[in-house]
Amino acid sequence: MRARTVQRQDAGERAAREQFGSARHARTGPSDHAAMLMSLQRSHGNRFVQRMLEARMVKSECGCGGACAICAAKQPELDLRTEFSDLNERSVDAPAPASRVLAETNVVDPLLSPPAIREAILPDDDCKNKHEGEDGGAVGATPAQAPPPAPLPPPAPVAPAAPPAITWGAASYSSDNGNGASTTVEQAFTPSYTATQDAAAGVWRMGLTSITGGATITVHTGGSRDPTTSPPTTEAEAQQAVTVMKGYYARGSRGAWHTEGASKTHEEHHYREWKCSAEHYWAIAGPAITALTTPVAGAANAAAAVAAMKPSADSTIASFKTAARNYWFTLADNASSRPYAAGQAVLNGAVTNVQALAATKSWTVEAGTTATSGTEPPCYQAFAAYTP
Image (cartoon, rainbow, N blue to C red; front, side, top):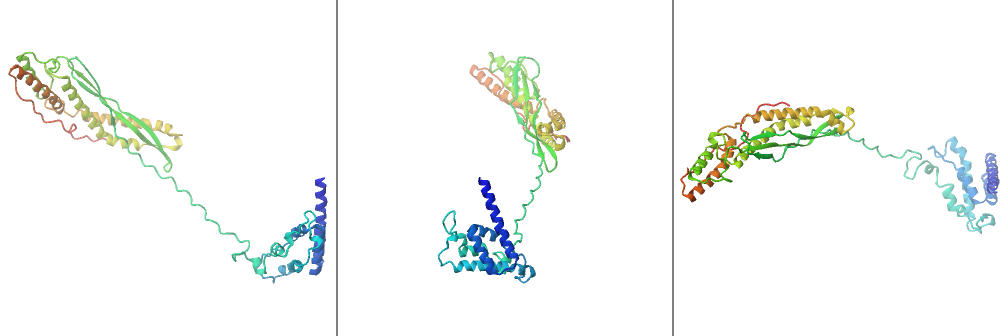
């Protein structure tokens, strides 16, 4: 039922528009058009007339001021709207006729009050205003648009990262009563690799989060008596103990009287030598590793990039270790050398203890301790050239 009602109403509105269109094309005068509009208002209501007039509103797009042929042809329709507006204004003080009361609401439609008609039908006062916007710009002109956003800057290149310093752990230490020479053996370096993408260069860059090093110290005490744990019991033993321990630095070997502490300090000096040797060459090898790259196209992620560059990095680690070890072995480890000076400093304390013991026993022993040339710096030879 609702659909059929709408269809009948739409048919009526179309007939009314056709009637109005035929009358307009018949070149009737403005008063005839006004009568026609009033008739349509009574038969179809205010809103219908309002919609019809809005649909037929003339939009002038030229700047002739109404003088051209096209604007002149449209002028009768503008005169018609003006007359219709005047009729409503003249009737504004008169009682509203029943035909102007909307049937569905019984309220006078405010849309057809004179100000509303002027606003909806002829919102502008003259032809000039129809050709210009409120700010004087031409109607239909493209409004000023904000400039497009600036393009994103290209990715900044990634500089090779500075390699980390070597982290040194405490030496792995052990001792036994064997007769062999005490030793210090370097441990393998353990690097931790990473990779950073350099989008600007289209490569992955090798990086290092850490590298650790260390040494293993083994002290043998066989064949020597430690006066700290087993002090002399006679004057002869005291005299021998003082003489043997005082001669360690010049002799370049441990004797019948010796301490584990002196041998450990001797070997710890070797560890210091190893550290300064490795750190010198690492300052060259580290940057060579972080300068390694691999194309982004050949590695889907950082792990793949590390795998691609790791063989070269490991090769540099190996060559660096070899260079450091070769230098390490140029440092003396014989009589009157710095490792023995380090051990002698410990033995001098043991000598002093035996001398004190002899004094309590009224024994006669050699006085004084052994002076050395010192232990610093641990690395004193010229470094050989090295290219990773």
